[in-house]
Length: 402
Image (cartoon, rainbow, N blue to C red; front, side):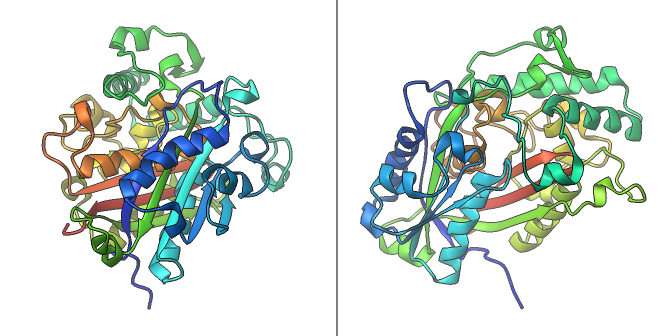
């Protein structure tokens, strides 16, 4: 019977480009920027990489229809490069491919890369998909702010939370993340904001205001993984290993008229989180998970995710947010690097960017935003799609002795 991949794979090195409006760079340049950091961190030569995975969502804009552009940009040694796409979880999907290759013994050293060049599309938000089976099944998807505004409205209705209280909690989420992002030289947005600025900002989709929405950016992030034994043979002493990696997909249940979904949470996130905790041996998430990087495409998404990850009780996350539970000095710090709110969301890169921050914090290498006490376990959460149909990925990494 399958027992999972806990501690079977170690992260040998990671890298992340600067995120932002990178008009002077193409996707290859961004991948190289992230890779150069990762390969130095790993302490290996490019020729030692056995296989690679590339996560990208809008391939026509970013890299085309194959993994060849990454092979060219990084001068990989004629190895297989598998291009993957899984909505906004594409970066974590590429990480899963590399991790599973090493865990299975198919590769000794594997590379995971995520990249997106969204600013070149000219869209203020994510480009609209105009064809494909998803649209055939459910029709026009609508706007991101519109879809997630419905999540906020449902949350208030189901849990009896006033719109004013939810707006205050969402504003706290945004202020917290911008304070963290101001300390990160790789973030796109590095200006702190205050509560009044958020609450008085233009409305985008009630109750989501301007500062409740993440922006659009260009960026890349990558990881090089291997077995713990190989990592130690290469001189690595402080090992960060993969404790769990789970992905759950919607199957239509949320949209069934006779279903049980109330629109106030992410069904897939709860499934992926429960499986990841079981794989990692986590029984008390709020006590054992030292920090999180979650998919805060909108401030309400982060708030609801705290309940989906079982860090807050159902209907209580808004109180925990206001109490500072997820602040940098709180019980379970969230978005220490600034999150999607400050990095923007180059889709293929976001999942690996989250893992990158967790990796740095675990090793005590996060500079001015480093936690005073480095965590032993860190969780990243990637959601793609909309509340009614989506994919969710949850990855837990930690020190090898945790």
